[in-house]
Length: 85
Image (tube, rainbow, N blue to C red; front, top):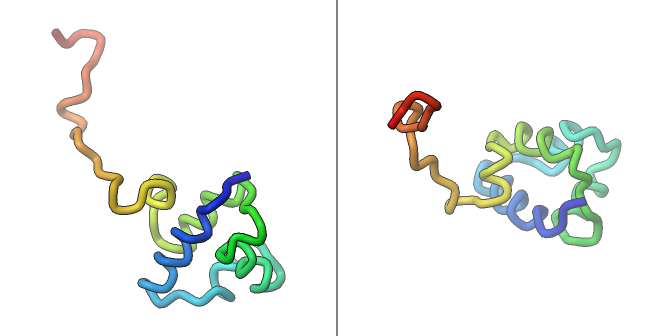
C-alpha cells in the first residue's frame, strides 16, 4: 500500500479541475467517499490502483510519486548500449 500519495493526487486533481467522483469511478470505487478518504489520508491506496489513478489524472506514475521533481534527463540517443564505449 502507498501512503501520502493522496496529497499529491489531490493537488493534481484540483489543478486540472477533475472531480473526485470522476477519479473514484476510474479507479474502480463505487463511492467517491472512498477516494476522498485516500486524499484525506484516512485510507491508503493499494499499489495495484496506482496506474489507474495516474491515468485518471492524466499523469505518469512517476509524476504521482515525484511531482515536479521528475524530469527525464537523458534521451534515447544517450542510453548506453553493450556496444558503446
